[in-house]
Length: 246
Image (tube, rainbow, N blue to C red; front, side, top):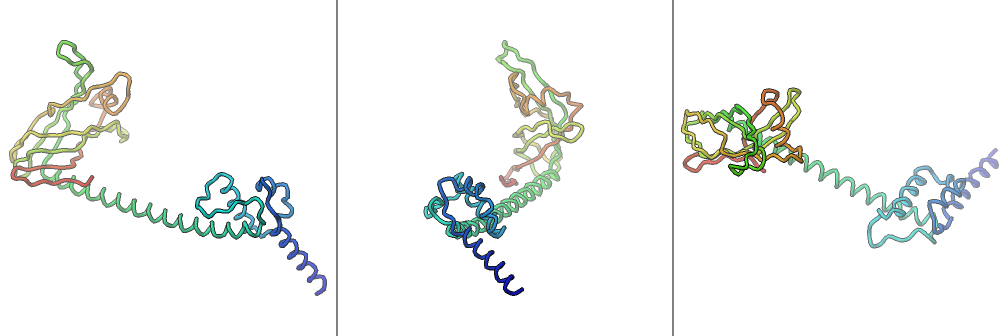
């Protein structure tokens, strides 16, 4: 019985040794497929590693100046390279995940800071979007495209004169999906406790060959959209400025 077990173990060792001694030719992947019986004697984990490494080499995704060619070298030698490559890949992946986590954390921090500034500004001024108007093109007045105009009402709830407010007006459909957004700059002074009705004197030219934010907003009835203003910065008389991070 012991003799039979020894023979089986020896045969297995010889088989593995035989596989590790195989010399790769010019088409390693094809060779592995054609000599599948021999390659299957390699432990599955090593075999999968070998396939991954040979595949990466074949498509040129193994980078580095010290990368050795596979052709003309044994399976055992290539497996050694594959293990080194695998460890480098793990380190690179860990570093990539770390950078991704850091970027996500930074985005969350900036978003929180933006919201905090926007909430603070909202406590100082109320901005309502009251209407949307599309002025048709009129060559006589030099208007060569339809012009989208947005009307607003602003109430200064602070105890200081507001000099300027910047942000974006956002339009959503009844389901809450965004129709489009536009950058807005209010630069008319608003005294404390006063209300200003304005269109900022600013319009957006539509493009009949496009369907961007401007065109989507212009083409919908105002009553079918929900409009809101997201403040990014506000300046007061005297020099005080609140500004959300970029």
